[in-house]
Amino acid sequence: VEHSEQEMEQQEVNDLSESPPETTPSGPTQELPAASLRSTCDELMIEENPEEFLQDTELLSGFIDESIEHLESIEASVLELEHNPGDLEIINNIFRPFHTIKGVSGFLNLKAINALAHSVENLLDDVRNGVHPMDSAVIDIVLGVGDFLRSMIENIKEVLEGGAEKYRPFDICDYTRRIKEIQSGTKVQSDAVIGKEEEEGTGQAAEASAPEGSSCEAEKIEAEEEAEGQGRASSFSTLTLSMRLGSW
Image (cartoon, rainbow, N blue to C red; front, side, top):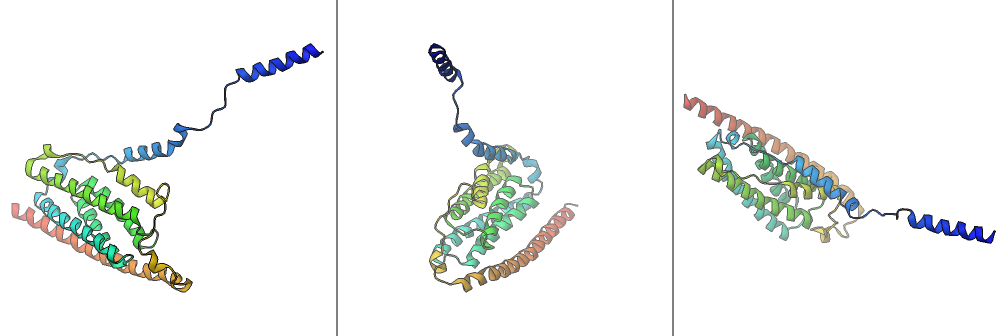
């Protein structure tokens, strides 16, 4: 009997040694979110045909000059925000140029510029509506996207001057991914909020009234921008019509 028990114990040891080792989720499992984000980015890769946005060269030239001015105004507003943190009017002054670039680039069929400007516009809309603070992560995005848009627009200028062969595609994936991360809070940690000192010690009553005021201000600005957008669309339509009539 003793010999039989020893054989059974030995068999159990053999079975354990022959069974496959347990594996714990490692590299590939942890990388799934990044892979998922990369897949999403791949879906956002935009292929453009320069001939599509070269149809109205006069309008395109005006867009290039105006957009460079808008990007310069964004940089100036960010610098101003450092001295007046949390100022809603300055935040709106950063939002509006991106909003304009988005609208006109869509009109001119500049798909990549439109998609990137739209993405950062949505982020800034969250900021001005109090959904997300204007923290260092947002400011980095604003400045980075501004520089990237400048490069994209300068390339459009090269195409306008040298022809469609000058066109270079730009991968906006990194910025759109980072913006999604900030909005969802998946990877970007909460940084020190600009203007936090002003908010400390204000009391619950002031905090409760802030969202209502912000909402009213946002609705006012949205109405102004809608009217501005309608006027801009009308202006572009009038200019396009006059150009076509002149060609006759």
